[in-house]
Image (cartoon, rainbow, N blue to C red; front, side, top):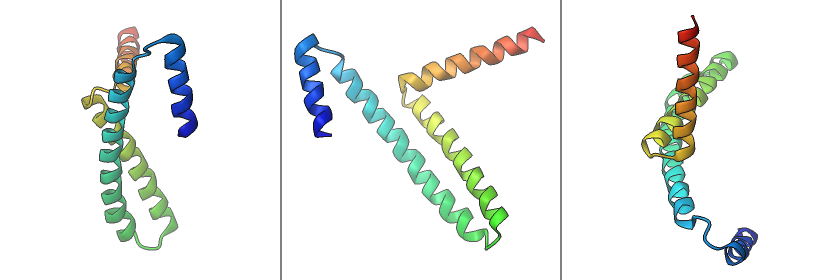
Length: 104
């Protein structure tokens, strides 16, 4: 972290402003989306993994479901938090789906 800050300061001094406020805003949005995902994942894991019993296969399938649900929760949360990378990815995915549907 100290190295990052030092290098960042040197970079800004060398080339000027590189959009620090936008970077910080995006980082905060990502942190909020990650916190939402973490909280929901904690409750999902607590609910389903403690109730799944001792069956390894059942626990494994529950874990896979929780990971998929967590991914979806993060992407939805990041989309609504207007994280630019997620919004761009969403647009690209929708364009791809539309091209596939129109080619049929």
